[in-house]
Amino acid sequence: MIARTLAAVVTLGIVGAVVIAAAPPGDEPTYSDEVAAIRKNTIGFQAAWNKHDPKALASFWAPDGDLIDPWGVTSSGSEAVEKFLASEHTGKGKLARSTYDIRKDAVRLISGDVALEDWEVVLTGLSGADGKPLGPQFHRVFVVSKKVSGEWHIQAARPGLPTPEASAGGAKGK
Image 1 (cartoon, rainbow, N blue to C red):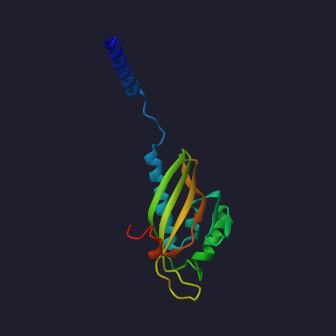
Image 2: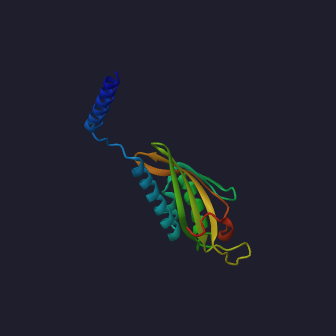
Image 3: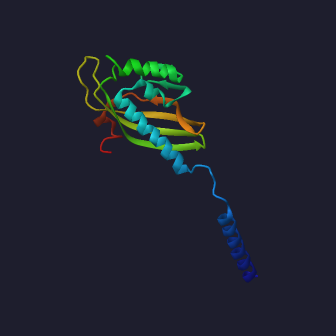
């Protein structure tokens, strides 16, 4: 009886291995391919921020995506996001001289076309309400991305309120 059971287990294992080996390779991207594509967008977003290019920044948003800044200003749709970012990144906008340094980008795929990201960011070049320069500011950004027609776009972004980096603890030293 033990010999038959052992023979059955071995046979099933061999059949299973043959079926797996014979399966044609899929055209579907792997989990790591999707994460790499999302992280590539994150790097592109950081580069666009540091160039203060509102059009390039808005290109990362889905047409119906939205942004709610830390003070509650809501921009719905990529055109509104671009308009908001233009006001913040040009002229005397409060982000016009800032530098964006994404220190950590944690990605979690919820499904094949939806991902959550948690960015840890250090902003430099900001000024306080009194106009005096602030030191490095830490903040977190929660991003929901959606894959449409093979490309990942921001569906929703929720940046947290910047705080002095030393008191944040999250990004310091990473």
